[in-house]
Image 1 (tube, one colour):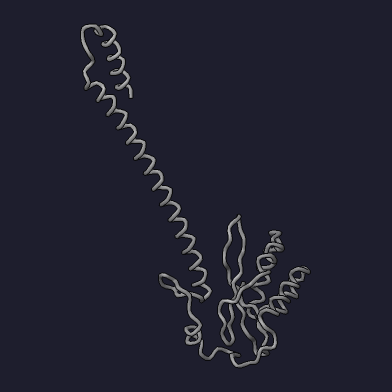
Image 2 (image 1 turned 180 degrees about the vertical axis):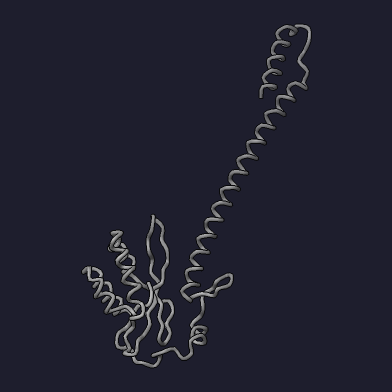
Amino acid sequence: MKTFLYYWMFLRTYESTNITKYKRPRSHYKIIFNYFVSMKSQRRTIIISIVIFLLGVLLIIGLYGWFLKKQERVQKGLARPSFPYSDYTSSEWNSMFPQYLNENVKTTQSPEETHTKFLSALKKGDFDGAVKCCILPSKQKEIKTLLDSVQQKGMVNLMISDLSEIEKEINLDSIMTYTYISKKNGNEYQNTIKFIKDQNGVWLIESL
């Protein structure tokens, strides 16, 4: 830029002192024109590079979020452990668990009824009752610890709100999964609640 300014000052001085004798060569105008074109081209290149960089960052963030969501489903046994981590179909679940316990037991309490009882107990602040009525015995200690942690963080109402609406996802003879949307830091995440039918035909929550 300094070189250009020096050159411009020289032209102005040259013009003022020799205006009656000489005409400014047209090549000088061409040099100035080319300089501005070059500067404009450089700015355009910089802007395009920044846009490409930002798009790349957004793509990486989106792919990372997708990966975490898929890994959560893999850990819960709902999706395949290999890329692209697609969900198991109902027929595949049946083949994976052909003789699952209590599959022929008649239902006496549906997952929806268990879900309603669980939420009712949470709204009353009766965490012990919520665990005893609605959680699989082998998972009661784990879920109780989770509920205590939620209470300590003051997030019970948020948890109730997240669990208020569930949608059936997988329906097998003794296993059912439902999805629900949880909100965190202004973002929405899909989570899964899993029910197992016991020997009395009561569907109990295995995981949230």
